Image (cartoon, rainbow, N blue to C red):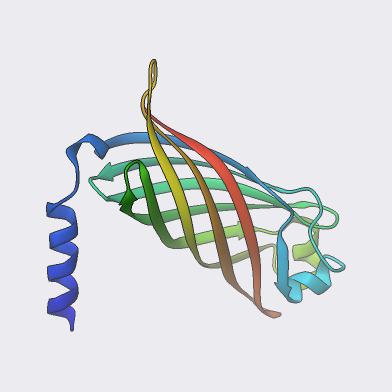
Length: 173
């Protein structure tokens, strides 16, 4: 099974377009988070105020490695997350592609963290998205994207989570 996974990964990387290789900056904004577990209780039911994400990435064909900072609103404060992710993009048709993102995150919970007994939580995030690649006259390669992500985090009060939708723009640097 591991051998088959390595062969598929090698094939995807070998067939990747060299035009998509390089560094990029990604900025996104989205709606209110859907909070889960004890975080929903600590935040009195839900987040209020949306979310934002900035990422710096290096792509190697279809596979990219990203470092990101994001914030999402809770009832009385904002949570801030720092993460490291792997992102795999597959072409669909023309300039359209789908992507999956998976990584590890540390989240600072603000005032709601005090109610949970932990000011920070560690966990993972997974996301699925759709992108449209284009060539920008001054910026070179760029993409407009949308994604749905799910954070799962561990605290002393139990597992918490947040589901976010985000729309954004990535530009080559």
